[in-house]
Length: 179
Image 1 (cartoon, rainbow, N blue to C red):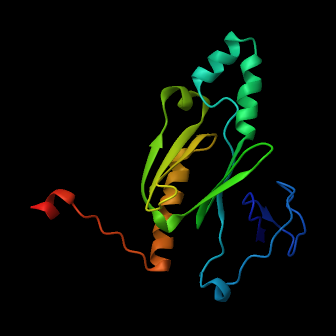
Image 2 (image 1 turned 90 degrees about the vertical axis):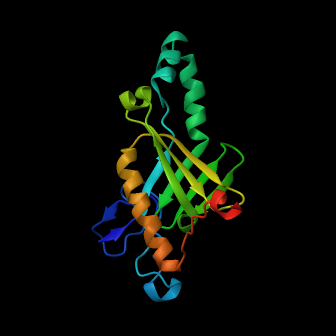
């Protein structure tokens, strides 16, 4: 079986040309010797922000007789998340694109947010704190997935990447250093 690097779907074909799930072309997965990795990079989540990310958005759509749905739909098109076992990639923009990437070994803390309105609609947020100058805080907002399960897989992948790269995080108490 071969796993799609874009959406994580598995194909029964030995060397497929296109993914039956997302339609994107299959890319050759790096071998273990080339990049020093013992496993190929796998996709944990790939998708966009939900069109109706919260109960408040749903109410606004009802109040405006559906007109707000156009705004929320365009907003959801403007951001695509791709979370793999090695990095988080966020592509922003509809016409002009901007891509931001955060390597998982830099992540130091996670916050899972599931406000009541989002829980009712099956969406949630994950906030990543990182040792990265350009991206010290990364918000993955309004995604329709089991965010607790994604958090657990993301946390395990982060720890694996830190071990693989030999990264150790030392937490220094600023108060203790000054005394």
